[in-house]
Length: 388
Image 1 (spheres, rainbow, N blue to C red):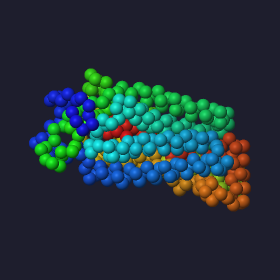
Image 2 (image 1 turned 120 degrees about the vertical axis):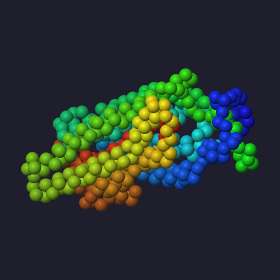
Image 3 (image 1 turned 30 degrees about the vertical axis):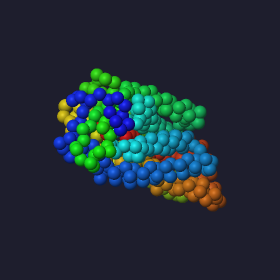
Image 4 (image 1 turned 90 degrees about the vertical axis):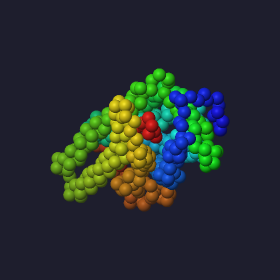
């Protein structure tokens, strides 16, 4: 059939007949909410995320004191966030420019379907693993400083980071069959000049033939496994960190000034932990709920439409990749000073000397120089029918 689709055989099984219903036809096109998301909200989040994460990477290259084990994880996390936003939001913007039908993926081709979804899952899962690794690094640094000195060397850290990327790639390869072909659907539009220029068919990335009954359930549930696994580990680690910080000032004999500094550090880390938790649950939970709800819908055989909730879940997911550097700066004075040093090209001698002293003292105790400035908790997932 015409309009950019090559040789599509149409029958009752693959035809969407909207000839008698303008409502049916309009449901295939961009509505006002989707347009607002694609043209305003998503580009804003993309810009917001790129500026913040690129700025963070710039700081890592300019401020030597920021080159720590913790920030090695956060640097890779920033890279994953940049790539995730570029691929996920870029996909939506490309579709808008190419086709009037938001669900149309004909222009991808089979190679595009495989690579797009592979990359989205890859950047999603590597972020989950990096967040878990940096949480464990912080846990050992605060709760088991001697083990931290032995285990968390730079060489071991980079091996763990490489392992996180490799594991994410393997898991992403598992879901390749879910997006292994283009499913063409014919469209019969109403006989109205308004629809005369619209494509007579659309294509969607689909699973290998014969697996439609279980592929949706598998996709939705499989994507929640890393999330719940990471959530359990992070909850355990954060509980241990908070307990250790609360008990530290009462168990170490320090001068009054040192106690006050220690308490300020404890409060600062506690604020960051709270911010991390709020970001994690607030931004990621909606998409995870959508995954579970979609799986239940597929299992029950009911075709439930989730409407605006899909937009909310997706936007929150994108925000999760954009806000990390801003949370670092809001909750941590050391990070704020490092940003000022990097972008102003200078640092006050007093601030620099103070950071060098703190860096040396924490290094001797086994708590790396960035124990009070760590990553925001985050995680992402994808659902068939409500993709990234």
